[in-house]
Length: 336
Image (cartoon, rainbow, N blue to C red; front, top):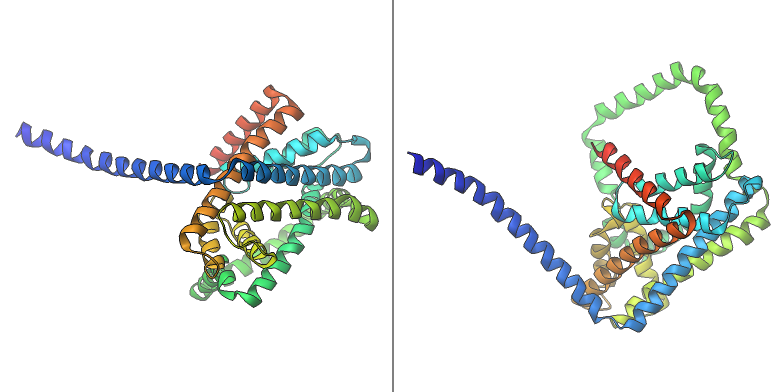
């Protein structure tokens, strides 16, 4: 009797151990595969790609500084603080889901700028992303014309349509609930909303001077986007993929789609699937997968390294450590 009981216990523990061993084996195999792909890339290509990625990040930091200086003229926000906050947010987004890095970035700006408000910095986030949003819309429209299958694979439109069709009663209840909330709550919230709206308008103050916006925000953003395209072209060349304006544009479009509808941090997995769909006419699946995985892995790692380095430069080691710990605790609490 005791022997059969012990045997049963051993069998019950052996199954989870086998599953865990299998998962760890698959993870190690994936890490080894990625490391092998990275080792295949020449050091020259890596240096050029990382230099372009660093320039892209610095230009975004410059745009952020200009936007927030226009919103809060008395703050005299420095470039290193703006770059540290923006790249630090990118680093956190690389490892945590649900845009935790963006929330952390808004918090950093809020505490670093005297008189800044959450509403003002949030509206500044919209201002900073406006150029890239316009480019993304144009990209998706062009790709929808030439490669409609890529857009259908990259967006959750079919799933959303199916959900609405399958839950008509739920949709009706949501609409009624929203109407009741607006009818009963709006009179009480109106004053608060008006106050927050004024703060939000302050964050978009740079729009009052179109020339200043073009010079200090649109131009750095355009140069930053050019660097981003350059990074893609460098990795494509490193894996002997055809580098033309059209193919680089196609890869940029698939990356745009994966970022817009990302489920995992950085859109891992979805980016590779879209790259395969986009470039299948121009190269083998193996070459495309190697390029996509390597670029995604290298850029994600560099975003984290660069983010930590710039934050230490801007805020110091102790404060950077405290910020990263605080972001991690907030994300864990939100997930719980």
